[in-house]
Image 1 (tube, helix red, strand yellow):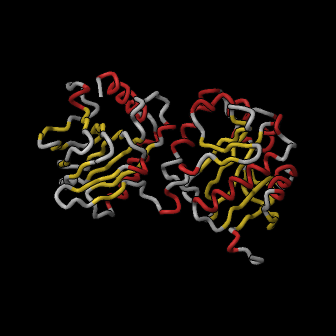
Image 2 (cartoon, rainbow, N blue to C red):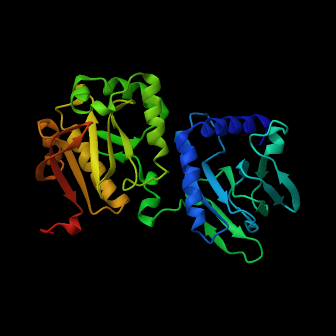
Image 3 (cartoon, helix red, strand yellow):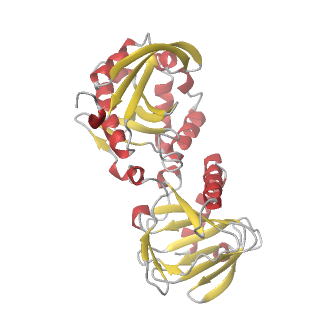
Length: 353
């Protein structure tokens, strides 16, 4: 990789370091490493979360946290070129038999070439964190689900995968969701303008006041937060997993559908732009996204909670197969109010199955 490509990666990492969700991802790894017997743990960063045009060869981004004073173990990647920089901590590397000090990303005394390690396919490498855990960022030239490690000496192989349960692992790979009228896909930063406009429509202000965006910068910040949650935690039992809804005739999103934790359950949230309402598109999106989420995340059921007075929302849930459970009072959209609760269960868990 030439210097100009390294400068692009360097700029991408500078941007990542300014994001709270990126720091949170490293903090989660610290908790995981503390309870692990492995020399390192990892998580992925979705490329869609990085608003930088990365070199064409880059297909995945990772954060690794290496345990202090424990060698990582020598291995190589037969199917990827690795580009790595140290974010926190210090240590040594041995790449292809050449030992060197690993210089910190923030160092002003070292060049980009000195701070970045570029490790070719099949080249054995090992890292030696010294005195403290070492956090590194790593860009690879293969997709996250395809990154393979081969241990030096034993030849033992394993695939690097996000450290989540099997049913949660590849949900993004199964996107987009295609229906007769819609395409449901992950958000990208370029959706901010459409999100801003839709959040300020009268219906959104009435029923979803907590989701109104002040301006384009606010909308972009919201999207950056949601995009980051595709990988950290990447599970609606633990955090939001919200997708854009596109009409097949439009390139921009016309709404959203997503899932988030609610008192031990997972609830669905959704909205459709006003000019696309009263066409059955809300129910179409809810049905398709719910079917996907039940399978992708191994959920037993999904709740739908809406203001009791929002008859359009209740009608969409019912048309999508949700069954009314009860009316109740709860904190909803920033205020205590009457709500209606619906539920959709996995086919195998329904009483009439």
